[in-house]
View 1 (cartoon, rainbow, N blue to C red):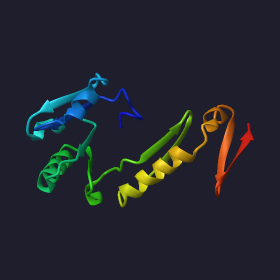
View 2: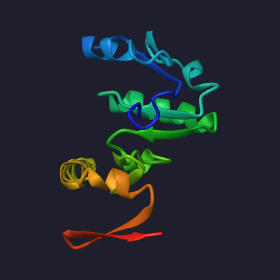
View 3: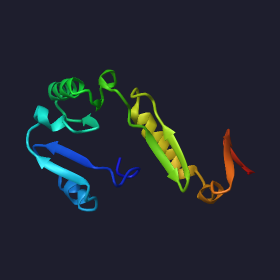
View 4: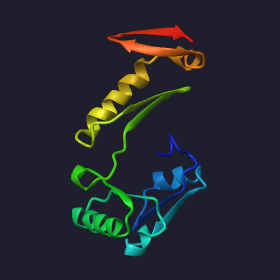
Amino acid sequence: MLTNSPRARITVVATWFSNELEELVKHYPDVELVQKAFSCGDVFGKDLVIAATNDRELNHCIWEKAKAARILINVADTPELCDFYLGSIVRKGNLKIAISTNGKSPTVAKRLKEVFQRHCPTRWKRCCKSCICCVTGSKATSTKR
């Protein structure tokens, strides 16, 4: 999320945080870490909720609270409880490629993202300023506007 929206206001509620997360958020002043157990008040005033705990019962409880508050929610690894999915995004300058499996296979989306990141030529960054890029098979062509 932060890669595509570095200025997003994000609140993370958890009973503990990894050292890596604590270090990461130091670079993002709009990310707040709240160390406590989840309570229903945590969803109020939010636009989106993502429940991503390792406790299915807690994730379901968070889903219920979000639905009651009419807030869009994504429950990790549970597509049937998702109002939206988090696609993988490949960005090369002005070119953005979004990849989604509608929550069915996040691993496939992640792998495709890696393939596009690795194999999309960096020249496409410059190309997208003045032309349309088309991918057919394994060859890329561009058409000047």
